[in-house]
Every structure is written in structure tokens, then in C-alpha cells.
Length: 298
Image (cartoon, rainbow, N blue to C red; front, side, top):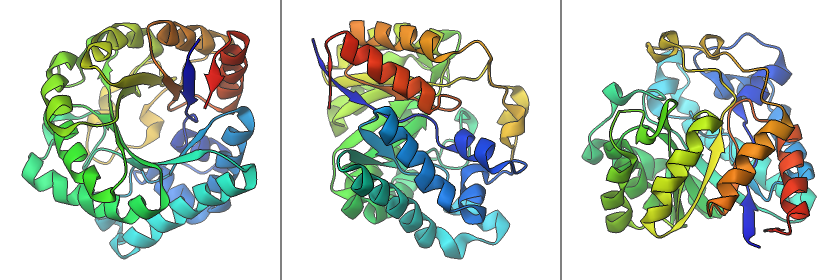
């Protein structure tokens, strides 16, 4: 039996659902401004469900996102507020680790807006330096291209903490990044920049088994946390989209998600959790299943 790190589930979609507000292009950042107490409450719920890692609500806090809404002056404050919510939840729970989240620059899922490594790395380094003193690892999430992943990993080192790299794969072919590049092409980035773990996230759970087969060859800890979307609508790939363009699936019950995730564990994954539309009930069911199978959750 294995020692499994159990991540939390999605934050952004959970925030939007609990707030009841209409989604905006600022997504989870807007909700945090309008309903700051909800971030802490969601972290509390994931810890209570059995998660051992709280992922900070900092995924989309980038200068390029904030500037268009006249909010760039809040860049540092927003990061610190999100970190403090996770830290407080961990303190109340009495244990756990905190992953400082850094999402893609400019937009999610889009290879066409990937910045060159030399331009992206300093932007990520600025964030990592803010997060680093307060978190246990820096989590680069939902990277859609090899160049995007490399820029994030290089910048993340400025946080002075272990770096976890997570990429998003094609929903129909888990052996390819959303850019169309072979997932195997990440091998060079892994070898050169040495992240502590490689993950696959925010793709449908059906794509993850193929992805695990590839990332297992990189020789480092690996895992997955899938989303609960039906697909990525082309409307979401335009400028300044909102999550209204994303449709959640109704068949992904906690029990069904557990079946997927336990399959990844059987493939050797030691880090599992959930992404968008995967909530506390899914994580609680997964925690129970892991323990019932004799695994240790750490």
C-alpha cells in the first residue's frame, strides 16, 4: 500500500456556486473581493473532508487579469489575503500543507497566448516570492504548452520551496497537452529544472489514465486531479471569458470520481485530488476509499 497525498478539490467553481453571483472574467478573484469569508470556509470544508493540502486561491491573480479592471494595485494584497485564508484553515484543522497556486498567464487552456520563457519566468517569480514564505510548495497549475510549463517552473523557484508542475491535457487524448504537443515532451523540462512532482489537472477524468502512463516515465512523484466539465467550449477560448461558457457534467458523482482516482493510484500516482466542479463530497469519498484500500493519507 502507498502513502498518498490527498489534494483538495476545485476552489473557483465552488466559490462561484456558493456566492450566487454572476461569473465575471475575474472569476474566483472577484468572488474573493466580494465575499472574502468564503475562501476560508471552502478550505475548512476540504480539510474536514480529508484533504491534506490546501491550494491557495491565487490561480488567476495576475497583473494582466487585474489591470483591465483597474485592480492591479491589489496584486500583493490579494495574494496575501488568499494565503492567509489557507493558513488560518490549516491552523484550525491542526495539520496539513499549503500549496501556493500559480495559474497560466493571460488565459487558461490557450496555447496561442503562451509567453516566451524569458518573459514569463520573471512574472511567475514575482508571485512565487510572495507565496514562498507562507506555503509548503509552489504549484504551477494547468500549463497547456511545454514553453508555458518551463516559464512557470523557472519562475516558481524564486519561492524557495519545492515546485510541483501540473499540466492540462487534451480531453480526447491524454497523451497530448492541450497545445497538441506530446506530453512526453515535458521530459526535457523535468530533467533540466527538476520539479519535485509532475501532475495532470483540469482535464476530464477519462483522459487521465493515458496521461498517467506518460508522466510515470519521468521518474518523479506524479498524480492527477481532474475536472468535472463536459468539455471546454470554444467560447471559453476567446478573450475575457467567464465560466458561464463551461458546463458541468451531471454524471460525475463522488462514487464515479473515486473509481477514476483509484485507477490512477493503481497506476502509481501518489498525489490525487480534484479540480473544477470536484467538491468536498468527492474528496470525502476519495479519502474513505483510500483508507479502505489500506493506503495512508499524508
